[in-house]
Length: 197
Image 1 (tube, rainbow, N blue to C red):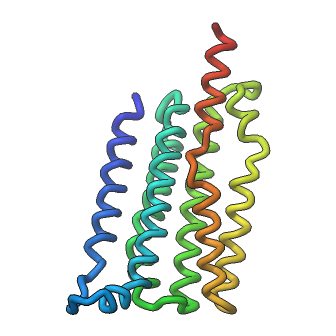
Image 2: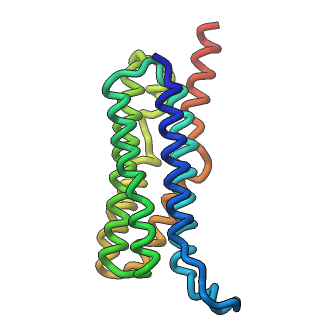
């Protein structure tokens, strides 16, 4: 079975998530720029969440290109990831309605952390389909971006109860870290094809 159905489901759900987030932005009743500026927390939380969804969509596309076969572990791993990503509109609206409040900021971080853990699980299930000496496995051995991200998420969740603005800076830092799609998969697969040739 190819990955087409999994990709189609993921693409469709991510499109719905973005649409729901857009619909959660209520139009201001005024017609002045100052009225629009009052929406800055909502627009800021939307922008950060949109960037996160875009990052997952990009990296998920690369990750599935390394999938040799769909197994139950891969399919359930993908659903696990989609579950946490589907909670992003809820937490986005909550933090937008209560800017820099401790509990919404922490819960936003928890959802981001759980989505990252779900992505990591999916990644390990796909990498397990390749031989131990495969370049793809070597490319992910260090995985400093993942470890750094987990640490920043955990710190952000803790800081939400002390100084929520710093937690948001950490969440934004993780997004900046992953803004450029992870090239390791494409590079490793290309190197492996050259070796086979």
